[in-house]
Image 1 (cartoon, rainbow, N blue to C red):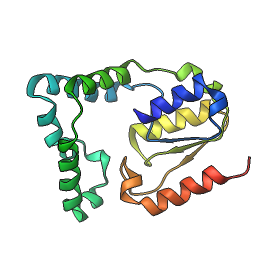
Image 2 (cartoon, rainbow, N blue to C red; image 1 turned 180 degrees about the vertical axis):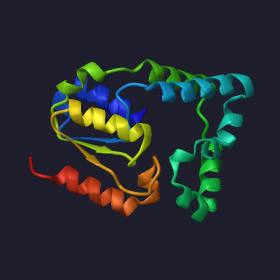
Image 3 (cartoon, helix red, strand yellow; image 1 turned 30 degrees about the vertical axis):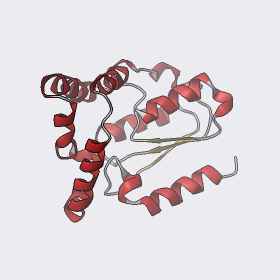
Image 4 (tube, rainbow, N blue to C red; image 1 turned 180 degrees about the horizontal axis):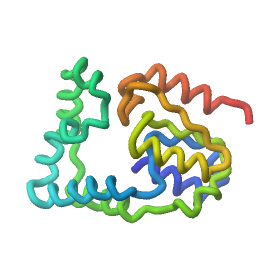
Length: 172
């Protein structure tokens, strides 16, 4: 959802945005993503938000790479604990999910005219969407770090931060 917020800010307040970084972000909700989000909403309504979040990392394996999950089981347990200790109200989660379902700015992507770094994995929905955004956004580039999940900033913070710093400090 953070990428959607950043995209909307870039459209609504272009003078505030000089560079844009989007990590596995979507300018709309493709059908497979809609299916997943609708299932989250249904699960929260059926068993409660806390119950859904107890197994969220396990149920959504693309958040972290398989290697990271295997090599850092304590991190995953710790992350689950942090999430469970800081739950938002279920209504807020459902509202956020509904906002994601309704978001669609594909027709406006050409209006985003700032250097944009699209970070994604090398396959799947995120990669396909990054290619779509690169075609539509005149100043976009794709970075595909190999072997990481959706949360590369957690899995490989040094690699992520170095790339981010280089992009953000580049001369226009």
